[in-house]
Length: 294
Ligand SMILES: [Zn+2]
Image 1 (cartoon, helix red, strand yellow):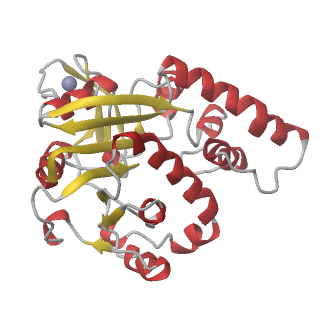
Image 2: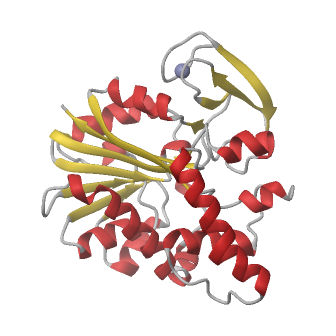
Image 3: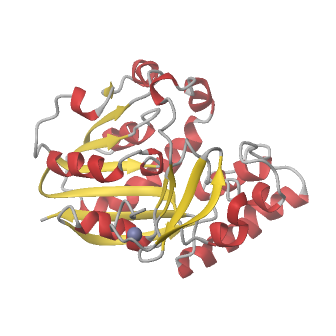
């Protein structure tokens, strides 16, 4: 079976999981789940109440994502958030003076749009009627791992970019991160059909370059959520209190209710130190890359 990203024949099966064949490309280190379709995103249960409750945390995370790409954005840039979910990035970008809109498949996103008064389109990309070459930047945060066909989607997105426009793929599961290398088939991000593609820096750069994008920068960050529960052998769907602290630490917010010496140590010392080491060594769990259309 060919690698869906670099088209190499040098791929092998690593394991069978939930009826999917988890495969690895030996040329570009791409991992993917073959043999099934994506999850039913239009009918995803609503996450609105959760986002309303955790609004400040998610807005802080989105400010960090925006901060990473600001240096490449023209003032007032027109930005599309592909896979926008609750719209927290669109909200932060609009407050920072950008002309940001979002799109997502999940129907509950319409309720988020109404709640925060945001221009979020619900439906597939072709249903939105966006004009070709109409965006200065397209961001996609925690989204490309969910796509059944990242190559086809990237082609569609690049057509919507103006010449010189940016594509920023942010915080996707990293197939060369320490969490995957250490926890193997217990890696929490290995969850088909929810996650189908796991990029390395090499495979994501290959995807970018094959669509005429010059890579401007990339980074990996943190251990991400679920690291401690994976190490403890807990289920992928369980989110521990420590994982919430991790999110808060990554976002730079105070851990709400962070009581007790162990939790204090985890949120203020252990997780920041582990994250700093992973960021420097490019072994973080989350991969980010920014490219510019020629
Ligand atoms: Zn490959």
